[in-house]
Each structure stands twice: as structure tokens, then as C-alpha cells.
Image 1 (cartoon, rainbow, N blue to C red):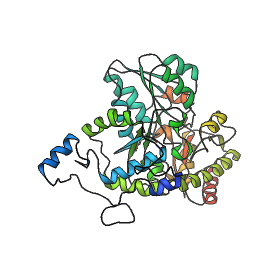
Image 2: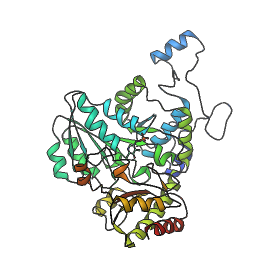
Image 3: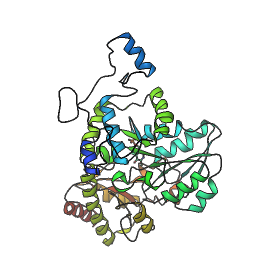
Image 4: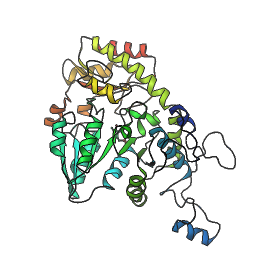
Length: 399
Ligand SMILES: *Cc1c(COP(=O)(O)O)cnc(C)c1O
């Protein structure tokens, strides 16, 4: 087993801020300060023997950017150090990461358990794609440990969960679910997008695999798509990597470079956005036009104790339900002057969305009602603007 907190040269462990700025740096012969972008698809060999040896695995080096690329490797190493994982592999998007983590592991006859409260595309993979390949699935209320217990069996190969969930910010008990899943022989895959690695470390809570949409907080500046899967060396290198290498959801070196630049400021941005989110949540809770505020960092969150136990802080996201239906909610959204209407999240710019008509429009009405995704529910991703401007914008639009 490799030491997850040390870099490849055996240095460290370093603290998060140091890893985010310097993790994985490999300078070329030109000794550039910032990471270079290796925008190439292939690599050349000095001799035919070297090429043959490279394919055999006798000499180290790159072969083809669908497999690996120097810029991508720096991103993977920086993510690995941030998460404290043994191994990491980048992908073209968050969904490519989710798909590869699940599809590389399960086979026909296996069983997968997941909460109903999932990002729409994750729900599609679990509900629509997996059953087509003979994988049985069970969806549970992620907050109810009895339902998890009843769903898990010796046939369960994987548990896939997201916490806090989108858009209702429900908290799943990662340690308790991991414990039950391991007893059934299943691996636990956590989509850690909403919490980020700054506030929640699923691997230390017992999860086996962590996936990210790097498009969200890791880039955090609306520039590119990306994803990453992290876990133990055996899973990442022997199960996931052959699947990625041969099916091709490769992360572009240019995007990997953008994500490296994003990682340098990840902690600063997430902490500051959360400072802003806390103030926005407190302001909304006082507003008469707001029926409920859902924020994991507030004492009135239904699972405040669990949130405090497994997350360092709340989140950059605040969800809230307005009095009145879709018409008045649309009116509110249309009146915002600073905050943009967008389904993206984790960005430096504050973005707001109406889940029931956008991100969750394909979810059937009964499930939406069960999950609390009502006509008055909005999800706000709080950005880096001055918080007074955000509060004034929300206040004027609510009046
Ligand atoms: C956005 C998101 C994804 C998908 O990521 P993409 O980079 O858009 O493919 C998966 N899970 C969660 C929780 C997300 O927010």
C-alpha cells in the first residue's frame, strides 16, 4: 500500500493549501513556474525496442493521451494528495467519472443500492442504464438507515450516494452506510461534489471510492468540464483504469490545466463562498416570503447533528422554498440583477436554478413530491461577490 498523504518523491505529508498549489508539479527541461500544457495526443520513442518495451510495461513513460498525459498526471496527483487517496484518474466530465466508477465494477446479476435523491444524470445511469445490463437496483430514502439495511444483500456490489444531495441538501450518513455495505460485501462510491474535499473526506469516513465533477468547485470559474475518480490503488488501477483506457472518456490536457489552476484557489474560494452562503441562508430564514431554508450549516437543518459530524462546514449551496407556486418563483428569479439563472454550481458567480423545471424536469412528479422538489423550491449556488450585494439582490427580488 502506498502512503496516500506523501507525494511521489516521498515528501510530505503537507497541509491542504500546500498540496493545492504544489501537488504533483513536474517541470519540463525549461523549468517553467506554472504547469505546462502538454497538448499532444501521442508520444515518440527513441527506438523500436523502447516502443516495444513501453507497451510491455518494461520502461516507464507515456504512450497515448487516451491512457495518460503529463498535464493530466499532475492534475491526478494533486487531486490524490488533496483527497488522501492512494490513486486517482481524471475523466472528461463528472458523468464520465460516475459512469466509469460504476460500469467498470458491476456485472450482470449484481445489485446496486442508491438513494432516490440523486443528481438527475446519476439517477439515469442507475435507473436506466444499469438494468439494461442485467444489474438489479434498489432506490432508498438515503436518510433512513433501516431502508439501507433492508436493501443491502450479499448480491450488492456497490452503493452509490451523494451527500449533501441535489437539490434538497439531504445528508447521508457515510460511516453508517459504509459499515453496512461492507458487511454485505459492497463497495461504497460517494459523489462528493456538493461538500467538496475541503469540507468532507468520504474515504476517512469509510467510503471506498470518491467521484467528482471537477466542472463545479474544482474549476469553479465556468471554463471547462472535467471529472475524477479516487480510491485505493487496486480499484483505480486494476478495475477503473482499464475501463477508462479502452472506452476513452479522456480529460483534455487543456482542461486538466484549467483544473490545476482552479485547484490552486479551491480552498480559498470554497471557504469564502461558504462564508457568503451562511450569511445568505441566515438572511433568507428571516424573510417572510421564504417558507423554508435548507442549509446544512444551520441548526434548523433536519440533520444538523449528522452534518456537523461528517462535514467541516455547511456548503456553498443554499436551497429554499418560496411561499407561492411556479409563477411567483419565476417572477422572483427574473427580477434578480446580480445572481444569474443557471443550472451550474460551485462557480465564482452566484447562480440560481429552479430544479423542478430544469435539473430535475425529467424526474417523475410522484418522486419529486416525495423528495420535496416543489414548484417553489430554488437552489442557490453562492459565489464570491460581496455578500451585501447578494443579500440586497435577493431582498429586492423577494419584495
Ligand atoms: C454536475 C454534477 C455531476 C455531473 O458532472 P458533469 O461534470 O456535469 O458531467 C455529477 N454529480 C453531481 C452531484 C453534480 O453536481
